[in-house]
Structure formats: structure tokens, C-alpha cells
Image 1 (cartoon, rainbow, N blue to C red):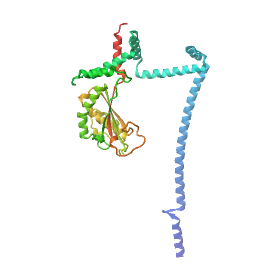
Image 2 (cartoon, rainbow, N blue to C red):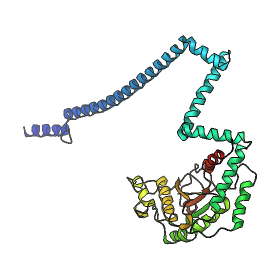
Image 3 (tube, helix red, strand yellow):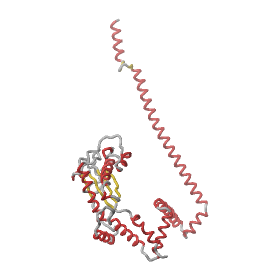
Image 4 (cartoon, rainbow, N blue to C red):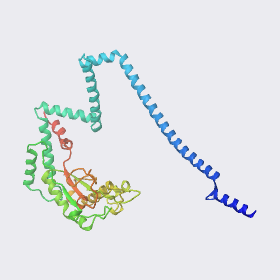
Length: 355
């Protein structure tokens, strides 16, 4: 009897897995399969709803287009109006005329985004006045740019006196032939390879870098501004392709402006990627350059090139990871304001012309 009991107990233990009987294990497996099937069905249901919504939207759009086409096909007056205005009879030519009208309307909308109707009318009236007095409009705009260049070249209150030769050089550049009117100034590069360091993964400037930005760099920039007749200073931060580390958040949206306004320190900036790191370092440089009286009145713009631009001005799409000091750099690029700012004095001159 005892032998039979022991054998039964052994058989029972062989039917257990982790304390569960085979029946219980099968129930558990079925339960897991039901959970997986429910998740799959839920995902498919979500896709089906999205597809139905997209189909409904497309049907509504097609219905609108169909209504417009039907209205146009039934309206002989519209077709006659287009034909009479265009003076055309060929259907293809009329279709091209209609497309040009649509394109013209798009251009007008783009102009309205930049100019008010009043400004546009005043500008056309000024151009008409110049032409009525036999004045070349392009030459007038060019002359206005020269006057603006001279004004920028003249010394501002508190600045050292500008020599007559500097003004003459400005005039010579403005009168020189060529589509650009001036040469592009060189790019000022400040890389780790040249000793201009940031702390690793940070926008905090090293003491020697900050001293150079306060003492040396503003004078170099001012010389280029006067030599090449430019007035906008773009500071571009570049990085290499190494990731800066795992960071869950970035505070640049919140703290960039306080840093530019000198209401917060550079050390407070926490970028989460190379794009943010490049911008944060550009902001750090701009915040220092803004302190220089030599650059007062000029536009300083921080930008980020991240890891996307090689030192030879090509896109970094081949992928060159590693510790490359030359790529971790600040580039200071100088350019001229748009010609629209230089032509602001034309309306006043045109109004003074005899009519």
C-alpha cells in the first residue's frame, strides 16, 4: 500500500510545472493568447477607423471638386467671359490663360504678405514719377544703396573718426560694375583646433575664448564691415558627429532669450542634441559680442549648423564620426541687408521731383 501511495505522489509531481498543473498551464496560455489577440484586434480597429476617416475626407473633397466642375460646365457665361477677356478661341490657349491667372493671384497673395496694398501703390507711383522725369529706376535704387553704404561707413557717435579714404573706398565699391555690387567678406573661423574651446557638451566659453571675443574679434569684424560694406553679423555654431550624451530634455526654448538679454548665464543652457548645442554655442558668442561698443547698431544673429556642414562647406552626409576638433567651430559670416532697406529713401526723393 505504501509503495502505491509513493508512486502516485511521484506521478502527481511529474504533472506539476512551477506549482501548476497542466490544465492550469493550458488555461494560462489561452489567456495570454487572448490578450495578444485583443491587442492585435485593437490595433487593426484603429487602422480601420483612420482609413475610414481618410476615405471620408477624400470623398468630401472629390464631391466639392465635382460640384465646382459641374457648375463651371453649366455656366456658359463664365466660359464666354474668359474667352472675351483673353481674346482666345483655342481651348488649350484658354486653359493656359486661366492657369496664368491663377498663378498671378498666387503671386499677388505672396506680395500682400510682405507689403500692404497702400505701400505697393505708393511704390508704383514713385516708380512712375521717376520714369516720368527720365530717371532710370535701377540706377536710382543703386544710388540709394551707395548713399546707404556711405551712411554706414561714416563714424557713429563715440566711434573713431573715419578717414576720407575709407569713404572713397566705399564709393568705389558701390560704383564698381558687377551683379553683386560688393565682394563677399571672408568667414571668421574659431575652432577648437585653433584654441577656441567650449566645455565638452556645453555652451560655456573657456576664459581665453571669452577674452578673444571681448578684445580681438570685435575689431576684426568692424574692419570687415567697413571694408566690404556689410551690416549683418551671423554667428553659426558647428559640431562634430559625436552624440553629446543621453539627455531627456532641453531648456533652450525657455532660456535662450534670457541668456541673450544677459539675464541668465551661459552655463544654464542644457541642449539635448547637436543642433541645440550648435545654437547654444552661437548664442554664447553673440551674448559676448553684444557687449562690444564697436558692434553697436549692427545686427547679430545666432544660427546652428549642427553636424551637417563640413569645414570645406560641403554637406556632411557621408558620415565621419569621431573626435574632430576642426569641425567643432564657430563661424562668423558677414553679409549686407536686403536691398529693400536701402531703397527706403527713394519715395522721399521721388516726392520732391517736379511733376
